[in-house]
Image (cartoon, rainbow, N blue to C red):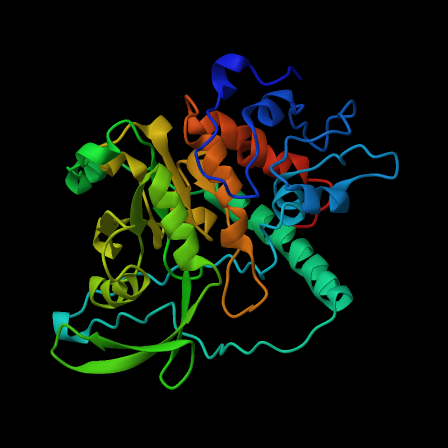
Length: 354
């Protein structure tokens, strides 16, 4: 496979002085990924690891191991929380007063930071990694069977989001909310208790776990991109969480909700075509592959988070931001990193019974 072309991967270094920055030269000089089933596959991988993480992914001879999407995400510290691919529950046709904003997102997972040795954390991470490989495989197989979204549905949902002057020329990063930035755990649990007012006028306190580095990640993203939250949750619930994450409305520039999703096979799909931005300039960070089922090359399949206090996934996304900020087409970068389009073929031998 050929080396990444300068035309596609000429990237500018951000002005940020963060220690986990990678340079354009490191990106341009990194050999391309080769699929697992390629018998002539290189022992190198296109990777975003910091120096501290690189030692964990090298063979004894010092070269970087061949990799795949999940291995890359794990080894670059983007996968230390358990991934549970799940379908959002279909939206019920009920009266407005009966809408429950917690459908499909509520659990009893409370967060508790207990003392764990590095060895035990490593063992747990390996289990998470293996589960992630399998669940990603299952999800991507299912995605191939989803019906295509009719153009009429896309046009019905089409949005005209105003882009501010300061964001002109910037790309757009979309974050999912539940299990990507936060996790809802019900009353009397979680990091914070936030008041949610239902459409029927009733209200309650929702316990919410906030993913480690969620606010920091949003802040860093806002320095380079236009930032949008796109959730399959209801507005009455989502707005309370978003206001907590960004109380001064400095980092999140637009909000999209369940009403903006398109339902296909009872799955809430986030069709990026409804947004008036160039598709090659959009990245969506979501724990569910189903959310960006028809835009796999735009997606970053971050692993589901519920309560792991040691999680650093969002922190480790920051060097990725610096890579894509000035890329000509983010899809080419993602294709080189994640290979979601060929993932099922790459792992067909390992999951032959699925």
